[in-house]
Length: 231
Image (cartoon, rainbow, N blue to C red; front, side):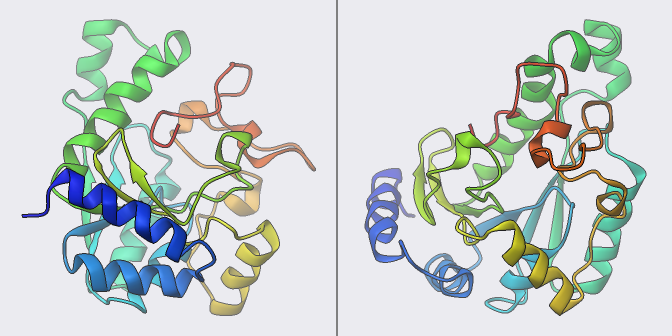
C-alpha cells in the first residue's frame, strides 16, 4: 500500500514534470500511475472532464456529492451521463443526515444562516469520507473560475485530504472550455443555457448577470465564494 509520504513525493515530482501537460497527458498519467485507485469529481454541470477521462481509461469512479439540495436538472444530467458513459461508476456521496433530519436538528434553511456549516456537513464531510478510499482525485477546477484558484497547478498534493489532486483543465480559458463542449457534443446541464454559469445546490445558486463573473451566482449576497472542497 502506498503511504502518504510516498504519494506526497509523487505529487511534488509530477507537479514539475506535468506543469505544462495537456488535459489528455495529465489524465493518461493519472490512469497509468493509479490504475483503479483514483476518482473523478463532478458537480454535473457538464460532462467535459468525464469525456476527457474516458479517453484515457473507459472505466473509473465518479464522485457526485448528493447534498439533497440539487436542481432536478442536475440529477437529470447525472443520470444521462451514467447512461452515456456506461463504463463509469457513479458514487453518490451523501451526508450523514437527510435535509429533513438536518432541519429538525439545526433549524430550516441552515444554508441561509450558516452557509459554511451547511457546506461542511453536506459536502466537505462526505467528500473526505469518500476520498479516503483513493490515492488520487481528479477535479475540473480551472484558474479562471475564481481568484482563489488562479494559481492551481495541474498536479498537486492535497494536504487537506491526504492524497494526490489532479486538475487536468486548470489552464483552460472559458473559450477553450466552450469550444470543447460545442465541437464534441458534450452533455451539459440545461440550466447553463438559462444563465446559471456555476451550478451548486439550488438554494445557493442564482443566474449570473450578463458580463459578470460566473462564480457571482453562488451564495449571492454573502461573503463566500468557495464551499470548502477546494479552498
